[in-house]
Amino acid sequence: QQQVKQSPQSLIVQKGGISIINCAYENTAFDYFPWYQQFPGKGPALLIAIRPDVSEKKEGRFTISFNKSAKQFSLHIMDSQPGDSATYFCAASFGRHAGNNRKLIWGLGTSLAVNP
Amino acid sequence: DAGITQSPRHKVTETGTPVTLRCHQTENHRYMYWYRQDPGHGLRLIHYSYGVKDTDKGEVSDGYSVSRSKTEDFLLTLESATSSQTSVYFCAILDGIYGYTFGSGTRLTVV
Image 1 (cartoon, chains in turn orange, cyan):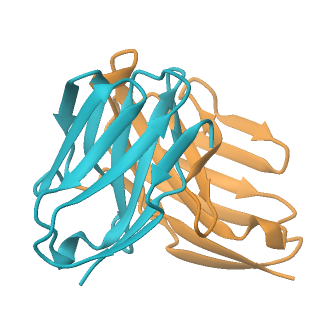
Image 2: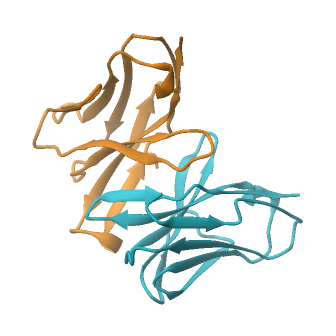
């Protein structure tokens, strides 16, 4: 059962525009929400993450917005650049402190293309 | 990639043959994971390890086995490869409490 629903599946944005990717979750036990960025031929790399006790986190051009009541979180890429073209995955994690009792549930990914 | 090396990077094998993929890490991380990535399915956990000789199944473990005889090496074995196991396989380590670091992947084609 897919517990983290990601949309859209693909996204095309013009250079300088704002890219927005959304994720919705069901399990209220999730307590950590990372976003991963993956370039072709590479493994996913952690981009930015948020805990549910804050509503927004910003790192450079990347911002996570978190709506706990709606069980939704989104990634905003400001001033999108062609170098941002990649696949983006949201995820949600829950469980005991670390390791084998902590589970990470992935969204299915969004393929972003930023046109020059 | 934070000291994670996957080998081979590419492999073509025939149906019914055994295949072993290797993940090697240099930073003494306790937790290691094997994922497969397929279009439309995202990343799916196959097996993971929480220490030497300590492993457990993920959500798509059928047809796969793993071994971890040393902290630095986590092996994924396809006992008898099938076409449905054609995929890109990623190894990952738990870096800190929550962060996962992935290797560059192995592209496996079963013909």
